[in-house]
Length: 350
Image (cartoon, rainbow, N blue to C red; front, top):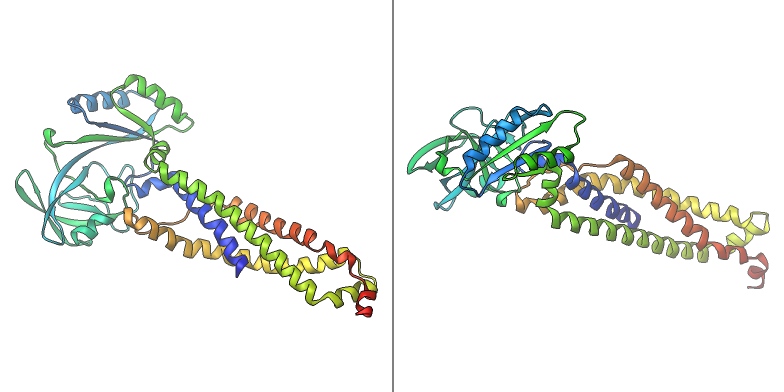
């Protein structure tokens, strides 16, 4: 059980860290996977900046595809009957599609998709009608889907609401570059042409948004690995001492009939390695199943209800098990050195 826990303790933080750093994690931030994000907000010239950006993108041969989203606010009633503001994004949701927990993306004019926390807060599920107020008028929409989002407090929505220009808080443009184009170099070039827009590679956007979480996860991963390996060494040493104390006479007898110290070390090592191999298999299965539940529970408060851990096979299935087995082998070799002093005459004298 200790070896299972040790294996689990190494793999879970590593898988969690790998998931957060993977580009696919963008889908948990309310947007589809793309290369670059352009933010146009906090300006008195939003429309002009948007038109400048679109004009540039239309004439850039390195751009494969792009889409423009606009953000605004409407009001809706929560489960307590209070009217609150809801941030709504309007744009083509088919260019960079999301994976929805339930339902689908808005396709009709009266469709509206809610983020997970918004759906909980407003008490809505797929198929329900939702009443919103925009410009003092009530509009009824159909909740067509629920998605995961950790941006803006996890409370966002998507719908084809035609906001007045004065009500648009900002624009976001997502784009993909053609294959083979260096993203960082192209972003640097774009920043010189569009100095008033915030242009960020999407992997960097994830890091900026979750920088504190990523830094903590890196620390947790390192500390967990050290604790796990130290625990493995400690338990291996204690177990070896118990075995050698219990089988002192049998070991001395084996040496008397011709077994070498190395032979006995190999016998003891095999017994422990069989346990370690079984524990690694069990720990890996737990990290891939129970680990998703634990990680999902940690992120549920920020808007992620369901998450799939992204595993790096080389590390999870080869390098980490090899390190754990190597630690056990070295511990057995060092911990069984005293076997060399065992002699049958000591047992006869006793």
